[in-house]
Image (cartoon, rainbow, N blue to C red; front, top):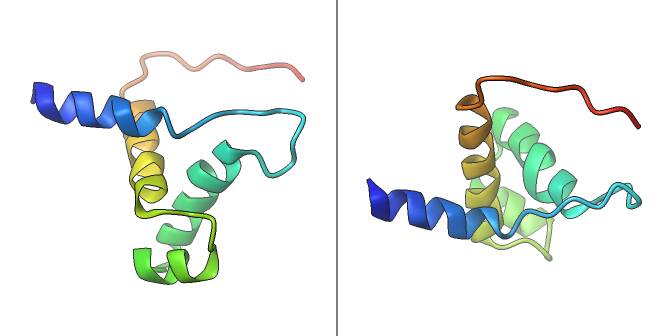
Length: 79
């Protein structure tokens, strides 16, 4: 379990947020990848369509989503 947590933390380092950029790494490697996966695209299809992504980006997006499900409280962020 500890090894899995360490690997998840390492993957999460791939996710960054830049609110000044429309297509920030979080959008591409986070939410956007989750939308593609939920639409039925395979990892291979996503990687073929997005040359700048790596398998680890998809795994990071899944780790990020898993971490969000463990949150006890969600706080709104004003822009």
